Image 1: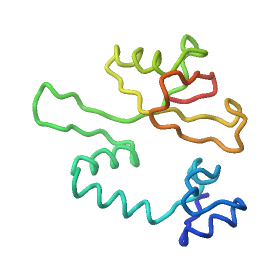
Image 2: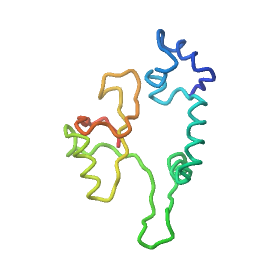
Image 3: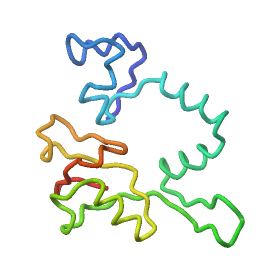
Image 4: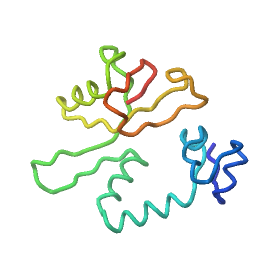
Length: 140
């Protein structure tokens, strides 16, 4: 279930002593359980300046493929989620990134489970620091 946060100050009802500015730091928000319409405004304004975002968002939301050019040199792309390969458990995010880059895969971030970080809820970490240690419960 996803909850819409219609009024930013109401985040304090979810976690006491949290300002509206810190709302994105709450476990519910970071795990995708809470949605704020203000973020939709930001995305829509960015699409005006970066038209390619429409194709990227479509790919992320509906897991569709897209081609950025009619050129035969451009490969068709898609976004997917993978389990952590056993050979990368305990290694760094940099190791993961360069391992995938050799296979023409761009790693966007990690989906961290509560078990891997002693957190209340799972969360997404986009482009974590290179020294971030990988756990078997993580998703790519």
